Image 1 (tube, one colour):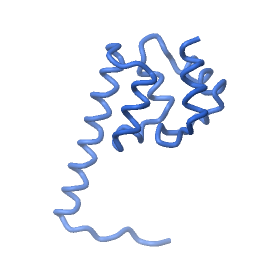
Image 2: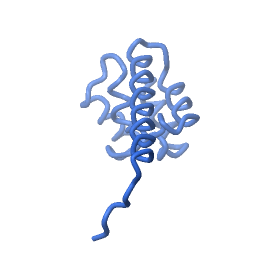
Image 3: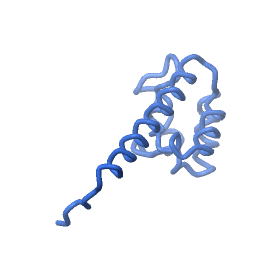
Length: 105
């Protein structure tokens, strides 16, 4: 097993700052979704344009919407043939289309 790289204090500080910024961006994005400011298709498009948001799991994205729990989210993902561990950046165009169709039906 390899040992982790030795990082300077400045490198660690930059890494912590970057991780904090990503978490803040994801939290703000999910809050907008919860308030109903963004549709599912809009959320996916926004996430594809922003690398920090692209790392959100699809299950977490769906459960951010009002009145969507893990059971409904998992059912939507299963009908669109999306694995529960999939992140937004990993969705193909057919999966996005199927998910949006299932969401709107």
